[in-house]
Length: 358
Image 1 (cartoon, helix red, strand yellow):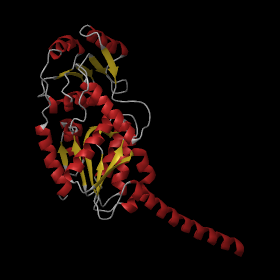
Image 2 (image 1 turned 180 degrees about the vertical axis):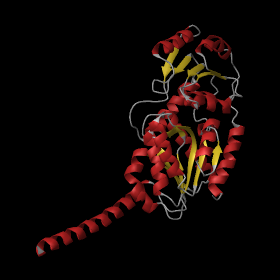
Image 3 (image 1 turned 30 degrees about the vertical axis):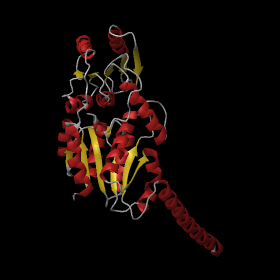
Image 4 (image 1 turned 90 degrees about the vertical axis):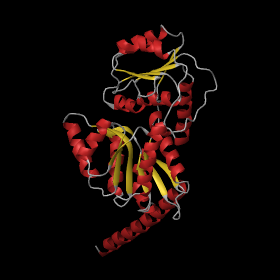
């Protein structure tokens, strides 16, 4: 019995020693991976996509660009959703309370995309001393028992953090967030609208580009999509199809390349027809005439309000209005994105989150 206790004691000592050495190894590994330095402020963008949603990756590109502009001396880096879950315990040991944590923007706050919501919840719980900013998001919890249950969980967690700031990217989400959360809530457009257009078309515009959803957010059935395609073919012989989502889990560098290629495809179309929010935004920032349909919730419709002054972006609730809208849009020749007001809105927001106190 005595020998057994001695063996057990030695095992505990060995596990503790191994655990300490492993923690040191992981701290060094992450410090090198993310270029963390004690004398530089870290701005950590958490929840960057490792999936093929190029709209989400464009959001990360725009966020990174903003922070590099407003704090050139900072160490700005993104952490994949999956990497964060594997690294969060060690990250707590290498990130200081002075570092700024950014939860990436998008349209996934709620219970439709629980992997994204879990990343937000875990960040808020694991880093109680850091200032945490949720970049412009659309809020949507389903109107059922599951939605109500998850909403209650998120509200409890979010309201438990004393240094949280949230931005909504549409007025519907903004009003809901103000009612649910105790922290400061801002109203701002999708951050991709701040991005300097990274692509200049290397060929002339040609044909109509269809970018229609094929997931749970689409409101069109297969027959309706075919009707839209047929109407487009009445106007142009060349009608191609694309999506802002590509299959697979990809590295950040690969996602950047794919995103730039996708934006380039929008820049060389005569006209875009889409029900994707970032399909609309890619068209706007590349000065491409665009006919936009709503999706199943308020996400696209409300975001359109930020760019409704652009006469080359037309929003339709009913597909029956498409033929006449196509005729008008295909005659557009002078299209110019004007984002000055949006840049001004973000300037105030960036000043607040970089230097303000809450």
